[in-house]
Image 1: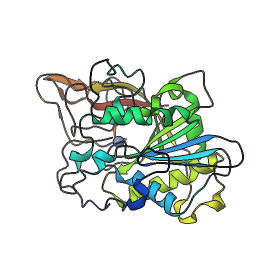
Image 2 (image 1 turned 90 degrees about the horizontal axis):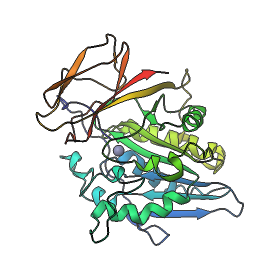
Image 3 (image 1 turned 60 degrees about the vertical axis):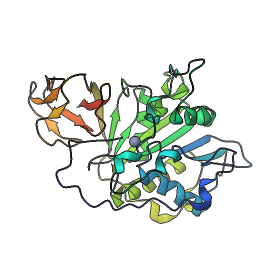
Image 4 (image 1 turned 180 degrees about the horizontal axis):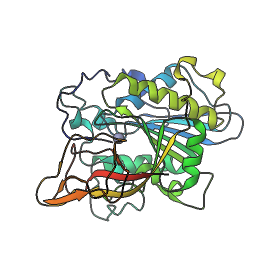
Length: 327
Ligand SMILES: [Zn+2]
């Protein structure tokens, strides 16, 4: 996902694309999709990366898992590089360009209203159709992303409390955000049973590991992957490279509830009053934090927390900022 007003002086993009090489192929007949089965029954555990082609930390995490030969103790483990077509366009000088090719892959899930007879699907739509069965087969899903601006790692848990409770028990990342997603379309993490209140066996967490270019985003991705594989009973800690795991935080994860998603309106391009960052709290209700289609955007209550303020892909209908309260 993405964040921020235009960065005044962008830090150096530290992460290089992982050398996928032979790992690009997959072993399932679907490019970039690897599946390993254990002799013992157990959960269908899925880890996804490159939902956005410029979000390299998750691709590194899958690459490391493949290099390390991680295999499930029970059930099955599936590792999926999702949008390879976008990843192939990665350009360190213009990293936003490789977020997607035709359309944001992470707004095409759920009921898929774009599926119409006689309409030829675009690049991302075709890939969604390829991966639909992979996602629908999963009991647990970890979806690794990074953000357009620097900020603390976030776990996006969706609205059902059981996702958040499970993520909180893993101890990372440090901030968990309950939100309904985007007006522009359903995210993969909310697809099918992952969006249902009555299916507590299905657990999905989308993690924003930090800024796209930060080496620390890869550290976060590997730490979360380690915790997830152990919590899902896919692996024991001893099966996994020890350096993946970081120390536990001193405090339990902070929980935020998104109350408003401000979407970009037609008309005047949106703007922010200053350079806000994720996690920033605005004390006074009624503070004008920016403008959207010429109308002011103000905070609706005291101690309003901003989540991923972003003008990076600010076309009408896209999410400009989410407003949240501490739970
Ligand atoms: Zn993303």
